[in-house]
Image (cartoon, rainbow, N blue to C red; front, side, top):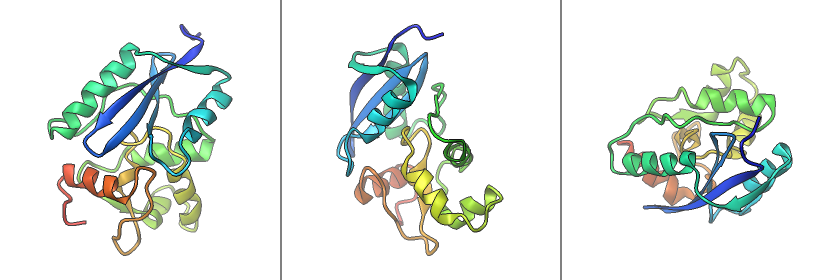
Length: 173
């Protein structure tokens, strides 16, 4: 049972762009780039799927998420411990859980991710699920690259993706 009828939303200014953090029912359900191509899409999808609204207010979860992001950007955190609420289709959630197994400082291609899921022909579906990730950074979709190792689309922009990979020691990309 939820202790709040709304998703608690706060802004977080990262070194590579503004993020919106959202928490519901004691778990982080949103970490979205404010400058993405379709701003507000992830939040609207969450509101629709959860059947609740959103309001600008901090919660213990958004406060902890911001603290852990500070540590991550300072190079002092390689894994996040904030409880997550993955809101999406069964397939999307499967992809996002697999993404969380990609180690800090490593990258994986869409094709490799599809193979890890036992769906070798589903690279495009994996890419679509990756793009629908509402909990960016915490579910590390920035660690997915093209088959040739090139940086591919990212909701926060390619510069943000490059920055995040640089934080993780992959400055050569």
